[in-house]
Length: 212
Image 1 (cartoon, one colour):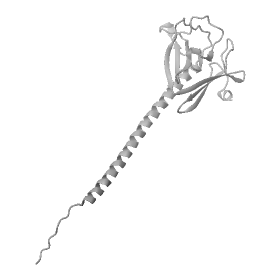
Image 2: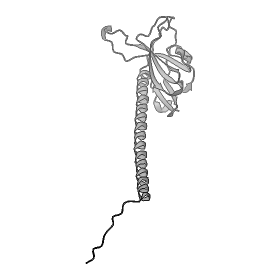
Image 3: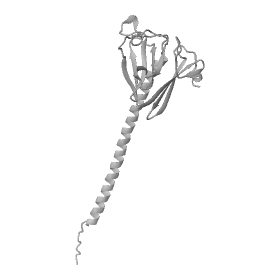
Image 4: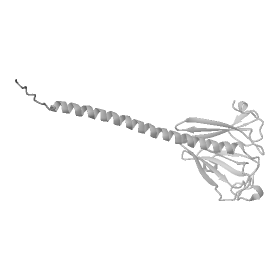
């Protein structure tokens, strides 16, 4: 009985190279998928952080503009004028238009805290950054530049419109009165224009009427 010999044969060089090529292709594909997932996660986190920044800034602005007070105030030690709201280019060293007014909302029973029931608030644009400037009291002395709080970055421009006597105006020179509504428009680099319309405290004007 003849016994047939079986000769074992190893992989050829070409087969090894083909296997390595396939393995390398699979590794690259897996890395690309993992890298894309990581990049998407980073983009998602940055987007979520940015939206949180915008929402927080708008919430602070909502609180300020909705509680505007009808009160004269002293600024930089000057005698209080008859205007209850100041709005002009360069106000508060703004690179664009700035705005300054007083607001209610700070409860201070029996003056226990180092602040008044009414505070002074302003907004300005500095280096594509929206900043809120505020003072603990509405009447301030010369050299008191207030407390600065950066609110929002990547702001290209800011503009205000004031509503009174059934029309919107870009300047405010009325004495002893506040506008019935205020429009604040922000132009952001990433989200474009955002406009908010606020009814001034005590106004009977409806938002639907003011938006036209």
